[in-house]
Image (cartoon, chains in turn orange, blue):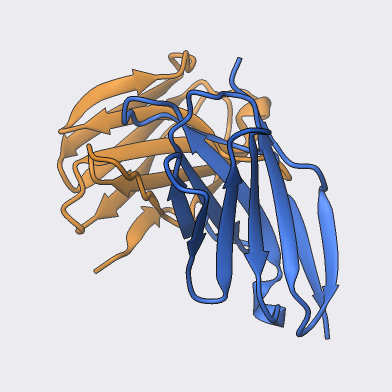
Length: 114
Length: 113
């Protein structure tokens, strides 16, 4: 299984809502990532977990809260978002160390904040 | 700071021709480079990678060339097919084997039948 799955595919939420994005992989990868991608732009790294511990936080606002409950799952909790947070949120996974870093991406969650 | 960019935002080629997508990077300490393909509605898909101790690497119909002297990376696609139409991103990873991968701006490839 070389697939990263993400749910939901689409999400519309108001600025006062609380929602969560979910990501799952069963490739035995111990590094998992969240990226944000605006239209016609490249993915921008938000968070990296390595062995279920937060390794990188790219100065992401606290209204985005990541969680890695186990080696296969990665969540992104959303609260009090702004309309400019509307984007495609991509999850990826990879081997945690080594000379190469091939990341496997999920299809993304298309988020719209009203 | 680190910057990975592309010379051309769009590229249009005839089906069957070869495609060349270029990328410039500015961090001479980067040790690993990757090309990703992103189709509409999908996440990026790994195409091919190359380490900084190599100049060329070939895959199935794709070749990546790395010129460290001028900090330039290219992706060559042989016999381009309609299914190759997508946005292509180059990406670099800094030295030390870390997790941080920085993506370039992307090039949209159109394949004309």
